Each structure stands twice: as C-alpha cells, then as structure tokens.
Image (cartoon, rainbow, N blue to C red; front, side):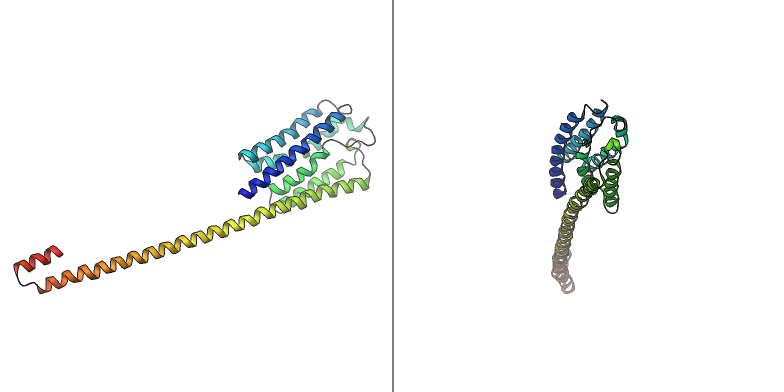
Length: 231
C-alpha cells in the first residue's frame, strides 16, 4: 500500500508538469480554436488536480486515476466542434490535447488490471492514431502518426506495466509477511496452550492425588476433617 501511494504521488507530480505544457499550448492555439475549448482545458486540468488531491490525501486515488485516463478521450470526441472541423488550422498544427495522451495511457494502464489495462492502452493509442489523421486533428502524415502512437503505447504499456508489476510484487511481499506473522502467532498460541496444559496436569496430579491419599488413610475425625479441607 505504501509503495502504491508513493508511485501514485510521483506520477501526480509528473501529470502536473504536463498540465503546464497543456496550458502553454492552449494559449498559443487559442486563436485557431473556438473559445469553448477552454472548457476542455478545464476538464483536463481538473482531472490532473483531482489526481493530485486523491493521491496525496487518500481520497479515492484509483477513481481519480481512471477519470484522468478517460478525460482526454472525451476531449477527442468533442474536439471537432472546438476546432471548427479543421478550417483555418496551420499545417504544423498539433492539438494541445496531445500532451495529455501519454499520461492518460499510463493512468489507464495503472488503474486497471490486465486484460482491461491492455485494452484501454491500445484503445487510447488507436484513438489518437485516427484522430490525428483528421483535419481537425492536424492532418498528420502517416509516418508521424505511427511514431506518436507508438510513443503513447510505450508510455502506457511500459511505464504502466512497470508500475503495476512493482505494486504487485510488493503486494506479494506483504502477503508473505502476513502469512509469516500468522504462523508465528499460531505457533505462540500452541506453545502457550501446551504450557497451560502442563500446569493443569501438574495441579491435577499433585493436589488431587494428595487429597485422595489423605482421604484413603483417614481413620480419625481430625484426618477426615483434613481430607475434607484438602478436597
């Protein structure tokens, strides 16, 4: 759990750094986009701030991770509206949402377990591949789209899988430690029970047997009384 928390927190800081890139590019591209694109910027930045809040204060961090991973997909879906279907965009235009795609792939890969993580990462990669081919996505040439998509896939697959593997391995260590602790407790309980059983046996042997002997040998009123008191 502590390892997962550290990984999530480190990732949230990296996400905030990409948020700076997103804001910078959104400002530059503002002249080409409909003013409503700022609503999409707020959505992305909000998912990043929420991720930081969730991971640092322990408020449903995985839920924020999922939201951050899916938010760019929503932006891709409504982007044609804010980009006016690509009219008036420069030839070298690259939508500011590009700078959120890699972190989105990592979020999906870490938040979900296989095979959902793999499906999500491939889905985000294909979404960008086809989106970038459209005029509103920059009409990027095939070779560059392949390079960008491979980068998204690598970020989600490699870094996400690595984080998931580290968390899983430490989870196994925690489980092994817990099993060892349970075995130690059970062993201590057995040893305590054996010691208590030995004390009971000693009491039964020494006190009860002595009482029986006193009662068996009693021949007078005093001996009867002594045997009775011992009993």
